[in-house]
Length: 316
Image (cartoon, rainbow, N blue to C red; front, side, top):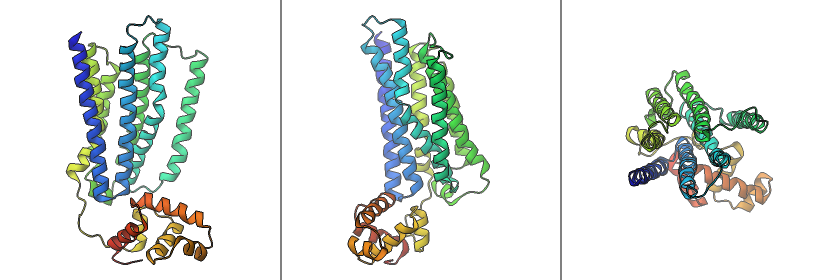
């Protein structure tokens, strides 16, 4: 018994360490290079490991806490079924960010359209599944853990297959791929890792707690593959980048109206003066400022002006 508990403790420490490593590396990459594609990767890491920590270790912890309580098999099965399901929104956002990362990395400018397709499709699938389950067309199986894991593994494999197809369809290396160093071959390796941990998770209880701990370690290890690959292979230039203002706006996904406001900020105008010149309300200017700061990663008008001057070599 003590060996089993020790194995879970060691596996938890490893998985927590890998979660922290993946997020910290992503934070450092974004802070160092300020690339929008790296911001997407950071969000993906945060939501991915939030889901994994909650769904995997939350489930294991609950099982340990209620092990001394006499619960019926039906209640135990429902707990095993619904605990991971509650964390699904984190996983869904992680999948969305992963595919958005692939699109941005391959220079595909369709992220807005993609969002309108991705979320309704998943909602429809979940709704269909819920209806089938409620009407007992899909009965609660005897091994609810394995049932949930195999469903999530199947969906996860489908999402990662789409991730791989984005790389396989693109025959040209985009600037982002050259800079990050994450190419088609790395996408293939990543998909291979997903297949391995999916198979391990599908048979997680085959050898008892040993196979469970191995499966958990594999899924967390695969999660940090992308940020570590980019961290070791990136070719971002640390030199001052001179670009025109239009290129600056394209890099940070600045809209036409936001670009107008940035020009006025760099010229030294106040929010009130900008509102009067552009014939918009003061609150609208403040809302645009907030979005501009978020996209560019700055916290003040001075930092924004400095960033524009650094990237373009001009005040406007």
